Length: 180
Image 1 (tube, rainbow, N blue to C red):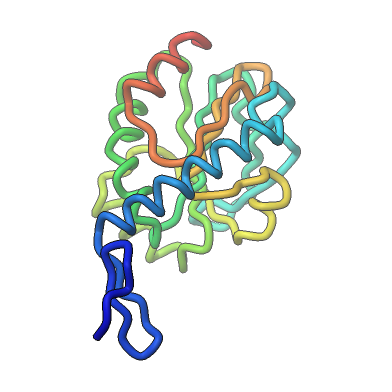
Image 2 (cartoon, one colour):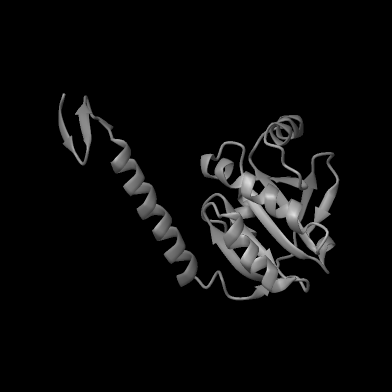
C-alpha cells in the first residue's frame, strides 16, 4: 500500500478514504446542492405541482388533499442514512403541531414494498402518513436533488421553503409557526 493523500491509501486502484475526507466531501456536496438549489430559484414561492402518490394501501393521494393545512412534505428513503437522523425530528414536530393545523407527510422514495415501509415506520415510530413514489417523478416534478428534501407548503398550496439535507425540529418549528 502507498499513501493516497487526503487521509486515505491506495491499494490496487481502490481508494480507501478516512472519515475526515469523507466528512469533508459530504459537506462540500451538501453545500454544492444547497447553492444549486438557491441558484435555481427553488426557494421562490410557487404553487405545489399537481401530483398524486400512493399510500401504503395503494390508494391515490394528492398533495392538494391537504389544502387548508400547513403541509411539511418530506422526501426520504429507508436506505437514506441522513433521513434516519431526521425522522425523530419530524416525529416530534408532527406530535407538537398536528392539532394546530400542520400535516407532516413523508414520501418514501424507492423504498421497497408497502409491508417493508410499514415495518420501518413501526421500528422508527413514524407518527405521520407516508406515501410512496419511484425516484423519477420526484426528481422531475419536485426537482429533488438530494435526500432528505423537505417542502414547507402554506395553507393555500404554495411552497414557501425547501430544505435539502436533514433538518432539526427547532429549524422546522420556527418556519412552521410563521405559517400557522
